[in-house]
Length: 156
Ligand SMILES: [Zn+2]
Image 1 (spheres, rainbow, N blue to C red):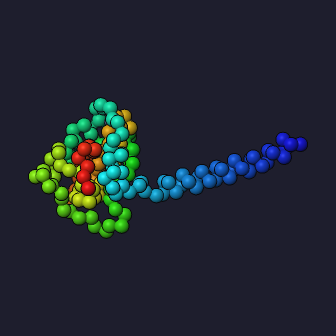
Image 2 (cartoon, rainbow, N blue to C red):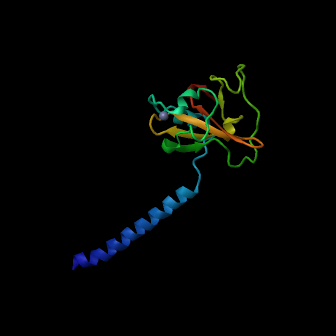
Image 3 (spheres, rainbow, N blue to C red):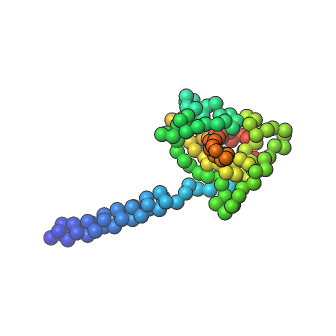
């Protein structure tokens, strides 16, 4: 008697749980990744340990073109974005207080400046190397640019 009373209840409960879970998964898939807008939050991401790996990100100390065939998409996790969802057109101004240039391996990672203000943050699923990526749109081309994320270069 007790068992037959419990069965429909737990059945209904597990259905409810499944429905809730579907709703959560559905909204997670629909919404975008978190917006990282402080150096501290980005440092926390970058501080996660990485291991050596042969993926194509190893050559990206500074900004490099990494086209779709080179980008190890199958084991890249999209973790966060640095692009302010409220900003219609992020600035193209760069930040180089110490004489670095766009492509310098030691250029500061300045969240509010180009090109960091339009980047997404990924991690390699094999080596956990974190990498920034954005896309340049030319008249007749798109150019995917990637740079390994180095915690010590992150500034305001
Ligand atoms: Zn890797």
